[in-house]
Length: 432
Image (cartoon, rainbow, N blue to C red; front, side, top):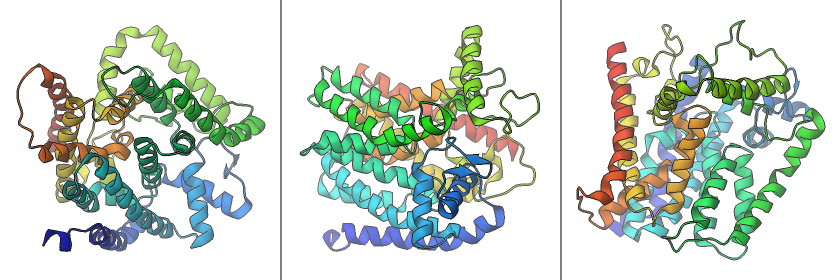
């Protein structure tokens, strides 16, 4: 009976059905409230790519945004049309392929029954579907990330070259994944407690392929702007997380005394951001214990921004908690499964660190990136499905919890995340 209904084809069909229904609901809602966050930037650049073949904002050529996602939107425009809902439709289709890739990854860690169960959970996970109907890069990024996982884990012929190419593509969407790769390289090269050690020579091949993959974009930025970098927003993001008014998250007020007001040249602004952020860090070391705590909190926060994306509230004033302005039912449906699998998954990857060494290194390095810049739970989302796999492995082996030294670090990691969420929930209740 299970084999008859619990098949990957049926699971993908269910995922597609949910996606189509949500798409029908989301499009008129987004037309009503308007697109938020990074979405207007992506659409503006894609419009110029489509109309005049230039990677630019309305004011001229730019390197402020990475090319990966705007080029994806451009391809959607060329294929289907320029209405934003075609982007959401394309992402819903990509998500079906993401589901299949996730299932293939699950098969590496779990038996067939639990692999299908993992795929089923992914298929109905609210957060997955929310990102599919947002003009944001997460669905596309997850596609490339899952391909990278499969290539890296299976290590078939020429896997080093293919992994390097895919990681390069990841960096053309989210540049901080370069830091994640460095962390993985050190984590795997110097680990003495795992059989998954990779030689320095193979990692060098991966690194060279990454450089080759991103080099056209680097050369373009150097020729047009005289910079050697993937974007001109790194300095801005660094300053946002390292200044006198930093709250640990994305706080960037466009006021006149802000040294990085948006009408400033983006090259100058980027350099100023790095300079001011470094000066603040050097002159105020005593402020960092509190600031790092705030960044850690923001990095583990619940995905309420993703729900707020579809809503508008006239009383909203940044940085008041978004949680207090989103429907409770939507919050519960989204938060509860996320919290359950996040906590179990984090416990599992810390407990079985040899088995999940790649995922553990990625998780820790993503937190580390946010402690350098600013915290945002969105940064962790692309690897969240891997925590579903790690969670289910506990059930597959019928793990029995014991309070011993081996579990102290996993328990500590879980307590940190849970305490952040309790703080968010209590604050939301106060604002209601």
